[in-house]
Amino acid sequence: MEAKSKTLLLGICLYLSFFYALTAQIRPNVYHLEEKKDGETLIHELKIDPDYFVHSIYKESPAEFVRTYGGYYTLSGNQIHIGFEFNSDYKNDNKKSLDIPFQIQGNTLVLDMGSKMAFKPTTRDSKVLDGKWLFGGRVTDQGEERVDNSNKPRKTMKFLMNGYFQWIAYNTETMEFSGTGGGTYDAANGKYTESILYFSRDNSRVGASLTFNFELKNSDWYQNGKSSKGDPIHEIWVRRK
Image (cartoon, rainbow, N blue to C red):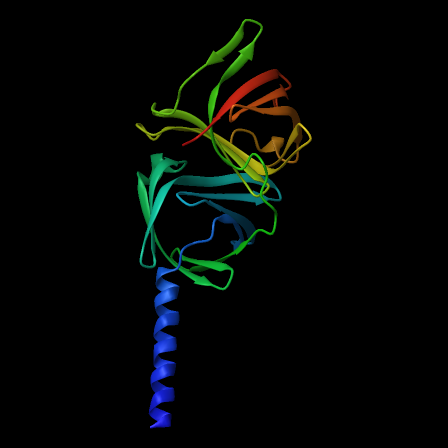
């Protein structure tokens, strides 16, 4: 009787472990994986918050942007369903969505993308500018020039999370992809610094660091300084809802 009870208890524990693995929620974070392919190393980066998913791929040496895609996602069992807002390869694959089987093994997020890919979470801490931001306008000598992109198909978005940043310019209606760039960032004492790890428009910009003054006003993010081309900018970013 005691042996049967132990067997039953073990069976229940195994079932619950299996059920949890299939229904577990993905912990919001930035995840990384290095993939060896054809003698090269591809860096895979995931940014996942409670409702948005971005996957970017790039090479470090020599620096080269490879791909990015992302959008709002839902979970069903052990499947991630992503409805793309952008896909840099859309002209080639015509994909507007993607379903990815996943498992959670401890802190590791395992995605089945033809082969099992084990992503490790970053240990960087959250920062005051973390979140999704839409370009909201500029400050000029004549005052603020605001634009509202929240309900328009053409958008420029910045996604900041746990010390990593990415901007993406895209059109949700036509799936036109206009560019992206990303890397690490810091924001403290009124200074915002981006260190570029990938840049789709110009790989030679990789390795550069840009520092801006920043201020939060009524939940909007104001930053001013010089762009990667050296042009003065004073931008307004609005937190995406």
